[in-house]
Length: 415
Ligand code: GLY
Image (cartoon, rainbow, N blue to C red; front, side, top):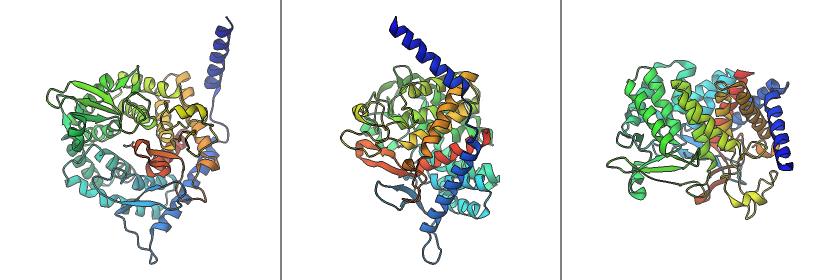
């Protein structure tokens, strides 16, 4: 009886919190200040990238700042460097926020070196990440016809990785042997946006059909225990039947790797935005709810929800150790951006709950402990890239900053 009563009180408390939640009265000012912070950090980055004569090599893109470092590590733009679009994307969003034409010029300059992708055979699914962030944002903000042409060509290239027997895109052609079959990773859900967008902007309708086949097949096989995603799904290369789910960047095959789940939440929300198919909206809520059920109160997940160190990790201890699990600001930013979108489509009580988490997360990331601030020119600290390889752990990473500024822009549009 006592248990039942406690559960009832907890339910009432959750319902009250979510149903009464409105963005705090200072949210508009807070979001404006957050965007001003991003703009000033971005100017620091641009100053760092320039040599003594003010020249910038636009083929080198900021990728990460590792724990304890204070400058960006750059990577050469390449078909195999999946993060090459995030920095131009950040510049596009900053231009959207500020209207600063100097930033617009830099957004164009950092976007151009990726144009070779339009005439390059598919390397892997990350082609979507590379051009959605750069050319798609650029096209949205400028209407530049040459950007549309790059996007359409890249959509056709991405479609060459589709295997109709499996029903999904082959994410990593180079790893077919390692996985013993056609592999599809959860991250690939994000890249469907390129296909949906192209089919509505001059491309063939088969691109939309491929994207929907991928989303439907992923929904059918790529999740376990209801709505927890595997990182990798392996299908038979010949007849396409599902072989197994496993991990690459998570703790274990069936653990909930935070960023993998964030790609799923963002991906199915985006699928609904483009198609208005109810099944995608229902599924986006399922995958979001599985994540939110176990999310720490401050809105930022540990890198993997099943890391046993979570039991001994305090939310204020941001230095990973044998007893403290690393957090992942990047997953938090992907989810915050997705929840602001998802909240526009769902019932009012659900919308309030999703907005509550989104604004709570932005509030957390506003704290000095989470910001690069004077320590380094990144917007945020404390992301986890690839924990099993112990790479980019407790780092600033370009995609965390990209989804952070995207979330801020989405929040600003809705206030
Ligand atoms: N797409 C790779 C990652 O999420 O780390």
